[in-house]
Image (cartoon, rainbow, N blue to C red; front, side, top):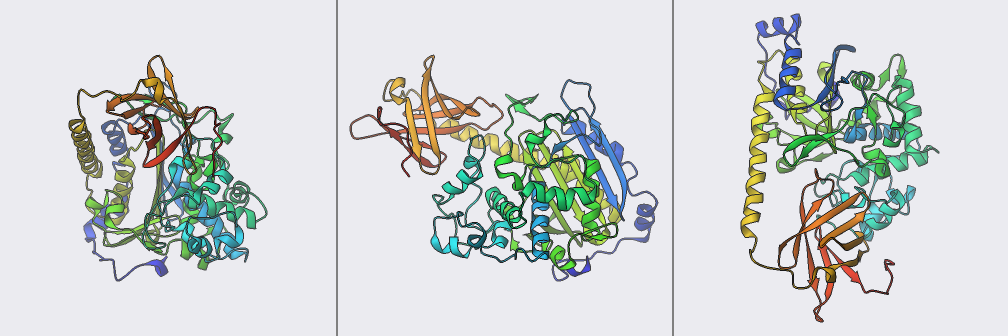
Length: 510
């Protein structure tokens, strides 16, 4: 991995001989107890972790339960959502297609997927596979096109042409799941298969990853699966009706166990080799971990405030930074009620994976840096305590913002019209169709059967969305009146949906 070091940016700090000797004896001494305590401190129901060093699994353990209140323990074979750690599998699949001459990193997307059209014709023409993999298409993830709605990938792509760019093309990193899904779709098509089949044939099978599935729908029949958890009304609970990421599968739909993921980590630390098989060339592999786009400090993880990296960047499916003079590649995964992280110190042939079944349980970062410190022979900082304090502070700031919003609420107002007058169908060529109906004197907004909210009056013609999936953050919608005094439009998530007059039909005119 020496070729990927960024020497000008890293400050190498020598360790003492005493620290080296202690590390050599038993780097992970006391780590099991540390994980158990962190699990309690962060109130995480279940977690699994594995550490690979020098091509050997040196630590693989599971803690807690698959479901809060249950007795079924998490094991190292329990399946968790990989979520966005799936992206590294997608970029690896693309690398294999580059090796085979079926694709180039800088191929125009239009050459392989003509139906992928963006608002700006120039961007549509110039956008490359590399741009898709580095989150520099000019706008962040339009999650409203895939989360909680019934759109399949072709329909998602059809709507992309209506997305307004947030920045100029290639000027700034902006995390985008749909761009990753598109890269995976292209890789599958040039291989003459689907993305799923490509990943299974070229990665999972050669690595012996027999427990891993590529999509959530493949979980049917699997018993050893962790249940997701999140806070509902300040109480940690199992959540149900979690959305699958299958419509944008290459961005985050895989499920795996830490036992299986050790095969993946060994493969990565061996620079694309599985035993005596070279599955991807040195050149293509090196490209994955080469910094491709700088990530500004305000867009990197809050952990950067504690680790103080000299650089933060994105490779192809990997976040990159320096830590205590070492090159680090990692990626997190977060989706309803579950988290993941895969972290590598390539030059030390060290890697780990953490899965947990609580939403945004950031002890994943703490455990990663604790393991890194252990093998760097450095002082054992209590990352769990320090990170919990930092994230508690961020949560407190969030509460203050909500309090300020509450103070801005104008008390004593009422909707302009009777509630039934707000009911109707609202459409937008990008956002799609929203139905508003009156149920027992309460307005109900529905984007799909999976995404429904009760509307609580806020002030004037503004209502708060209280999602029936109550772990989702509350939002605001506002109704606009026309010159005739009737409801003309609905504003939600920064988009204005026009109301369809009764009798006109709900066809979307695009």
